[in-house]
Every structure is written in structure tokens, then in C-alpha cells.
Image 1 (cartoon, rainbow, N blue to C red):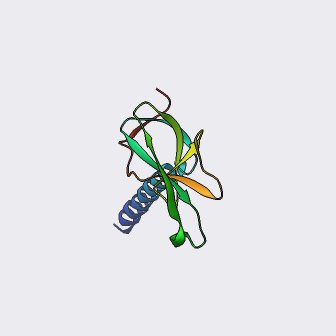
Image 2 (image 1 turned 180 degrees about the vertical axis):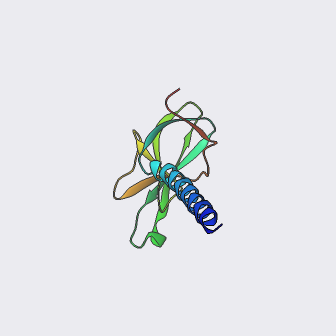
Image 3 (image 1 turned 90 degrees about the vertical axis):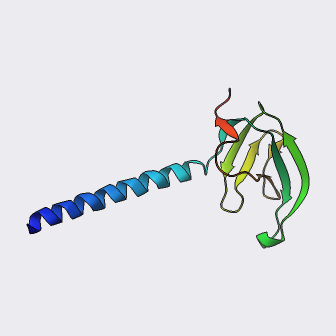
Amino acid sequence: MNIKKALILSVTALTLGVGSFSTTAFATNWGYAHWVTIRKTTYVYKTKIENPMSKSYTVAKYKMQPGYHVKVRQSWVFPWVAESGRFNSESHYAYVIEKSGHSWFSTGIH
């Protein structure tokens, strides 16, 4: 009976470990910029980066219409950051997209 319990326990631990690894792999995948096509009207905020980050402030606001192509990535500080063309983030400014989830874009260029 003890061998059965040990086997079930180790299979359960392995399953939970693999499940958490795949979730972490998906979350970190968006740490790198990907090309996306905007599906809903989206606003991009040009943000001046200050030290400490709590002193950062918005400088300008831009509007992206559906069909616009842009590279985006997730950030530790901001929800989404644009990384291409007109919206090219750097060390002094970040182009922040204040959206949550993935419903406002589709992956790839369509």
C-alpha cells in the first residue's frame, strides 16, 4: 500500500511541476517583442522614464487603428510596450499600451 501512495504522490508532483513550467514558459515568451496586428482601437502613451519609476509621466498619446502592425512585448513595469517603427521604446521613453490580455490584437501580420 505504501508503494502505491508513493507512486501516486510522485506522479502528482511531476504533473504539477510540468504544468507550472509550461505556464511560466508561456508568460516569459512575451518578454521578447512579437509582431501583432491590432484588432481594436488602441491608445499608446509615450512615457518619460524617470528614476524611481514612480516619477515617470506621460508625454503624448497616440491612437492605433485596427489593422496597424506593431511589435509588442510585456514588461515588468508596464502591461505592454511597443517596440517598432514610430513606437520604438528606448532608455529614455517607453511607448506603453494600457491593455490587459490578448483580445485587442492577433499574433502575426494579417
